[in-house]
Image (cartoon, rainbow, N blue to C red):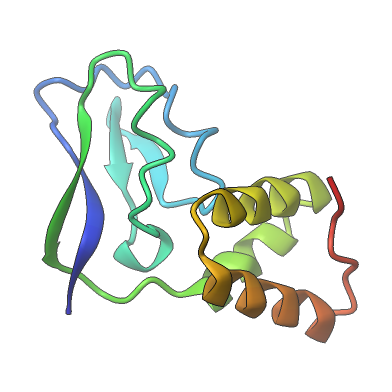
Length: 118
């Protein structure tokens, strides 16, 4: 399916890691001194990682990519704690991603985890 997803320009990326904390979905990692998109399913394509990149090495493009999977993203976030979950929910709210918010909250309820309040 075609959808918005990030792309990292390897020539521009210095591997500074500034993008990593801005991606609570866990789609980015530093591998071989470069930021890498580890899986299409973790990238929501909303671009929270764009602003922190001092080299402007990250952009959003429309291309063939696996569907974003909120269930798998929340599975990773649950292990990282309430603050990471809260940041992710705020990110979704800021981008008006109501379907993903509903999915995330349902997953939290299934796992008997309180929905973090700001």
